[in-house]
Structure formats: structure tokens, C-alpha cells
Amino acid sequence: MIEHIRSTPGRKVHAAGILLALVPAAMLLWLLLRSVWDVDIFWQLKLGELILDRPGPISHEPFSALHLGDPMPSVAWAGQALMALARRVGGWDLLRVVDALCWLGGFWAVAAACRLRGAAMPAVMLALVLTFIAALPTASIRPQSFACLCFGLLLALQRLGLRPLLTIALGAPLLVAWQNLHPSVSVGVIAMGLASLPGWIAWVGDRSRTVPVATSVLALIGAAAVFATPDGISIIQTSATNAEASIAIGASEWLPLWISGNRLNAVPVLVTVLLAARLVMGNRRRIDAGELATAIGLLLMTITAYRFVLFWAVAMVPVIARAGAEPDDKRGMGGGWGTVRVVGPILLVTLFAPLLAPTRFASTLPLAAVERLRKEGVRGTVYGDFPFGGAIIDAGYPAWHVAYDGRYYRYSRKEWQYNGGIENGIVPLVDVVHKWQPAAFVLDATHNAPLAGELAHSREWRRIWSRDGIVVYVPRRL
Image (cartoon, rainbow, N blue to C red; front, side, top):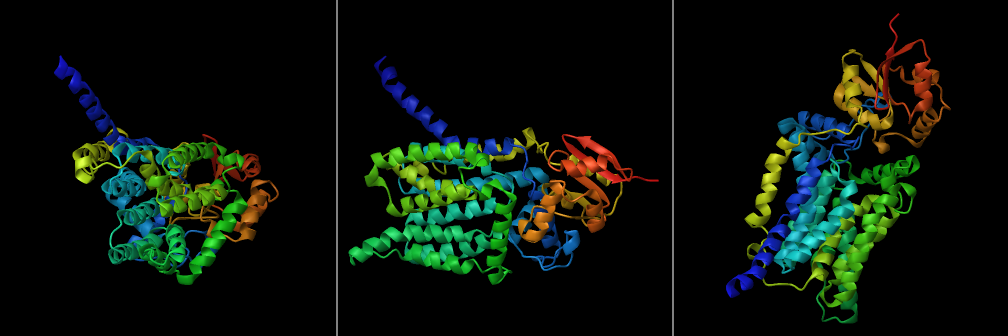
């Protein structure tokens, strides 16, 4: 009886350890069970296919009807190629797995580094749960997942505390790869700069302190890596144009947390901030000033533009892992990280989740409507709402071109204003036909109600599809 009583707490601790070890696999399963909803992944994949076939970046516009042959920036060209390769090899199921592993890999990499440096297993898993929930609304299949992975690896290098030269040697190619996979390495520059700041302040006050060499040098290398793409210095103008157009159109990810469209997304961010603040205030002696400075800086960026929430969430992992519990001496393999208890369930989910839960697409995507249009055998410009442009490109290029798509940087401010005029009924159907000579229309009947209404009453167009609020029109055959 005494032995049974003594063994009961041990079994509870063991069971708790098993549950904690399942957290990463549960994160992966959650992502893989979600439907594909991002409208832009389709043109990204088609562009990636062209890059693979060429091979190399595409420098001239292939998709937009009024810009064919114009110079085109190579934004995220390497990420697009890798995603297209994944779909080409294993279809959407493999692409979903690759994307999810990259997206989560950013969180897992820095969490693993924390564990290897002695962070307690419960604190590491708490950090993963909180930050995963905070960033989950941004999880979609797109090249930004590569950016998350690269950022997590960069923070993992910082957390491991390797020799400065080794850290720099590993970090430099990572930063260059990051910018070509997704043009957001400037976030890494800011993070490394913020991480260096407390060290430099301490050094100014006491010259015997160690200078933060690794993070400072990586910040400089990252600044140079911004231009280490086929676009070179022109990437600055492309990024500025993209940001300007995104804000003008009202894309919620480019807008502050407090707008109505982001209030729901702000809730998990606020909860994570409050819980983390309580942990940090109660355990200030365990906090690293550089990690905290990085997290605070990225939080301020997230508040002003929601699109930075993913990077902030990854930066919060080491902060919460430090503050969540006292370090223990069961590190690395002995503590459970990297063992079968963690990696085994991840492998099982990776192998079986796509088989048990095949790829599903959100009903808001016009995939069925576009497939119906393909049967008509039309060629030319297919006018669609700009969020539908990607699906039209993926399904019909090179037979089809588009009037608009989700590449905000592709179209000028005047063109986006013209698009707004069409959606608001200021620009009539006759002008749209004159400008693009469309072979078909694929519209959201609610979002583009004026144009859809004119088509419904036109004798020159016939409707061949109407479902889930999406309508398709082709010329009426006389």
C-alpha cells in the first residue's frame, strides 16, 4: 500500500510529461485539419511553376492583361518555387504538410533552443500554446511560412549562445535565404538590433561588459541581405508600393489591431501579453533583456500593423519559456525535447493526417466556378474580383489572363481607384468591356454587386454558374 501511494505522484508526473510532449503534434494536427482559405496562394503557385520550368526568377509580367511583358519584381521567388515543387511532387496534401512544418518550425526551433539551454519543459510548452493561439489567425499556405521558420532559427541561434563567429557564420546565409524565400528579413534586422540594444547600453555604462558582437553583426548582415535578391535596391520601392496599396484597399493585416476588422484577432494577443506580463513581473531575475526588448519592439509593430503578429509570437516563446518556471537540469534528449515522446507524434501526424483529412478548400474560393468556366473553352481575359485573380491564374494560364489579382504592388494607385469605381458602381459594365474585352466574368455577387447586377440584366452575357454567392458569365451565343 505504501509503495502504491508513493508511486502515484510519479505516475501523475509521467502522464503530465506525456501530455506536454504531445503539444507540438497537436499544433500540427490543428493546422492540417484547417481548410485552405488564402486567395493568393494560387498565383504564388503558378508563378512558382514558371520559375521551376524556366528555371529562375520571372522578370516580366505573365498574368495581368494590361501589363503583359512589363518588368516584374521577383518577390518571394524562392519560396514560390519551393511551394510549387511540393505541390508538383505530392499535390495539395504534401504542400499543406510542408507549409505547416515550416510555419510551426519557427516556433519549434526557438522552443528547442530554450529547452537545450535549460528551460523547464512545462514553461516551454506553455510558451508554445500561448503563442500558437495568438498567431493562429495568420496561419495560411503562403511563403510567409518560410519567413517564420527563418525567424525562429535566427532567434534559436541567439538563444543557444554559441561562439560569436559560429553564430555569425550560421546566421549570415540564413538571412540571405530568408529574403529570397520571403522579403521580410528586415524584421530580423530589427530583432537583432533590439536584442543588441541592452548590451550596448550596458557596455556604455561599464566598458568591462561584453559587447553584443553576434547580434550586432547579424543586424548589419541582415540590412545588406535586404538587397541580396534579383530585385536589388528596387525591392524598397516594391515594398513601399505594396504597403501603400494594401492600406488603401483596407487589407486588415496592414492595419492596426484596434480597427473593427482586427478586434477579434486582438483578443488572443491581449491575453498572451497579459499572461506573459504577469510571469515576467513575478520572475524578473530570469528574464533576458535582449529577448524582452525584441518582444516589446515587435509587439509595438503588431499593434500598428497586424501582419507582424507572427514574428512577435515567435519572439515571445523565449520570454515565456524563461519566465514560466525555474530552469531544470533535464536538458536536451534527457528532458524530452527531441525524443520519441515529441518527435514520434509529430511524425505520425505528418504521415497520417493528410490521409485521414484530405485537402479541403473554403467555400469562399471560386474553384468550382472556375472549373465550370474551363469547360466553356474560353480564351482571353477573365475579369474577376481581385481576390479571385489567383484562382483564375492557377486554373487557366496561359489561356487566361486577369484584369486584377492579389499582387497589390502590380497595379498603380490609379488602377486600384478604378477597381474601386467598378465595385461601387461608378464605372459601368460598358467601360469594363471596352477596357479589357473580357472573355468571361467571375464575380462575388455581393462584393461586386453593381457589375453583377448589370450582367444579370444584359442581353449580351449569360450566366453559367451561381453558387455560394459566386457568379460566372460568358458572352451569349447568338
